[in-house]
Image (cartoon, rainbow, N blue to C red):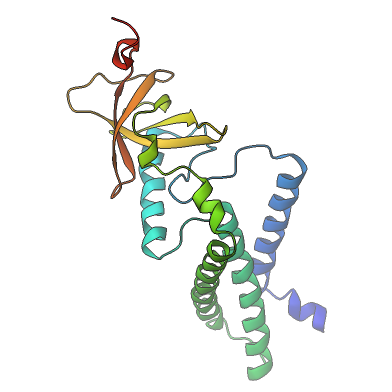
Amino acid sequence: MAFETIFAWYNLPFIALLLMVAAYLTLHLLGSDSPSSMDLGDLAVSVDDEEGDEISKHRVLAGVLRGLGIEGVPLTMLLGVFVISLCFEGLALNIALRRGFEGYRPFFFPAVLGASAVISLGVVKLFALAIRTITPSSAESRPSYRSLVGRTARVVIPTDKGVGKARLVDGEGNLIDVYFRVKEGGERPEEGDEILLVEFDPSERLFEAEKFSINQNGSEG
């Protein structure tokens, strides 16, 4: 009876999500070597095949999460906590409702899903706060965006749709991806070109940049 209750139709979506998370974590631990130090301002750090229109979607998501007060913690970690919490909350609520009403009505499911999502969002916020409190040095160790002004970066995605993405390596060997738009009147760089980060807009977390040439650093003519 207990087995049938756990694997009832209303619990299967939550169980499936838990299995997917477990499979992802297993694969990640066994062989993933992609950069995972991205914060919520760099959602696409390790995604090399995204198209230009995906950049805007990632930046919008980053803005929404920052608006909820959730930032400074790797996105993958936050998603994992949210999904795991959602699944356990959903399973617990489903079991409680079934026992309390001596049966399970179909209209319980959307209510359980909504309640679990709200509770899980609170769990994620508390988790992010705890991580920032326990390990403040993790956020401080990442170079601030303003400190990158004057540095050069290599274009990963050109500015075909207004905003591009570039990559650079700081003095400690950390791989950093930044979003940029070309300075007004400047030449549009292509993929693989070097750009100079001229100015940083904190409201958009976006750099104004121009195509870099050796003459700009004063080392030649």
